[in-house]
Length: 533
Image 1 (cartoon, rainbow, N blue to C red):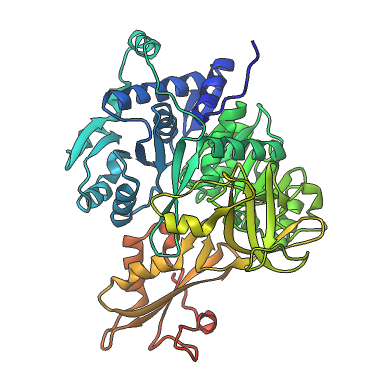
Image 2 (image 1 turned 135 degrees about the vertical axis):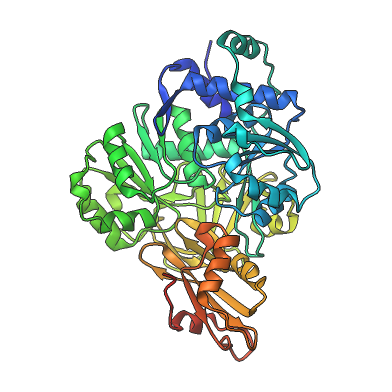
């Protein structure tokens, strides 16, 4: 019988489990999970979800740290015919409530340590939610407007009982144009927007990336990026497609432990963002770590400074460095072939396999090489649009040459040279690229405006060697207030995800304005910055 490649994301996990059942697929802390174990556990979760009334096309929200439970929740949701909504572990109640309501999620899988955030969110919405709680069962919260289940109860079954349950499991029929996930990203309106991603989108994008990275089954990929970030998520999706091993860490903040892990696990692939690159280059003792197993390092989220590329290549001469560019709305756009790093270090590369790009003017016509314009993307990696936002979808995803084709108008300004290499120039909107994340200035402004002492506020991105861009908040207090920058930072930390908290806060008597009365953000760039620390 001819064997065809799977078309659904979860089918790739099952195929790897069939081919190499006892191979280590995932390393989390001191626990090692084989492909068979992950496949079985995700099937058990799918069975539980279906028995509790989950229907095909439902959405399941996942609020967990980087963990095996997150991976099982993702694949269990997909097997049950639903779409997963993976959320930042530092999300606050207000934003969680918005996403739960906007997505219409019918289930939330989270940790007991996040019970207060979950309660804050549930108090703001009316929809019933089935809750699945991971963690210490003695701390299991009671349900407020739904039904609670313990994660441990789902998997606390004897081997024989599990085999019997799995042998009788009938999964719903799913096709490749069904939604696999909603990936929420910051929006210029101040509220997050859910990018609709099908199985076909994910598999197509992952296959193209695997192709140009030249991944192998013996790869061991160290993932320190959050699974709520599509760059981190796809490390798992891709690895399970070609049967590799993922070493999953909570974050990159403890750099010493991360570098030790590379030697211990013989890591071959290390995806980074510019913040990690800057931290590595500042480390004076890097030569004391065993990094000989590293084969490649990838970067996306923001372009690496040319000087950082030069220093990284000098620091790790045996490692292939791959610069890339992408957007949540199409996952990935381009990569720079490693042999072009010397002559085109400031480029983010050319279109990846099975993807086509154009740089166009305001009329949508291609501009000559070297001229600036908006980046337009065409291909199977282009997502379906924004959940429950047809107006924004129509503006961003426009008709292509064929009836069913959509082209992504990215809002990013680029120029393209005569060889087809792309150069990022900036954004057309107020989005800030910081710490590898895309942050809406409007969302930060909306949050800080809720402070009683704030009269006006303007948030912008400023150049930063570590973060790519740092968030700067310029605040005008109400008359008579003695608002301090420490109070602003404290409020931001309590109400925003960690990567959205400003690095700089400036207290002003008034915001500079242009002749037409608009805030002059260029002048704000030069206002004296007061460091947050």
